[in-house]
Image (cartoon, rainbow, N blue to C red):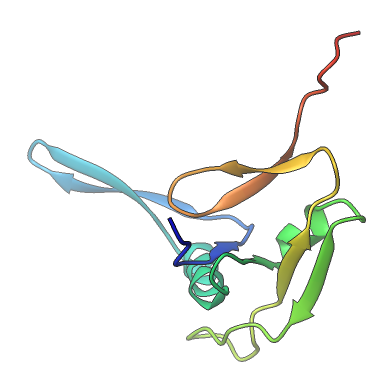
Length: 113
């Protein structure tokens, strides 16, 4: 199956809201963090990953990225700080999560001590 979408990752605080009532409740994430992550995702090339500045700063030095012109987001004067993720170092792999957002986590060693 061919990939038809890119992925976006943005790190910051978000707000979890409870919505509903009378026997129906749902939860949703809202705020600037979620909107920025969505803008990164919708601007990512097919099969590619765009990450925000805070995500980039949390990654190891040997992650290979290209700084790109970030997307414009309503309510912000400057473009969003964005990087195209090109290569992860050995030992790091994307961790699938809800929808298409990924987090990079160290993988456990294959040998025990």
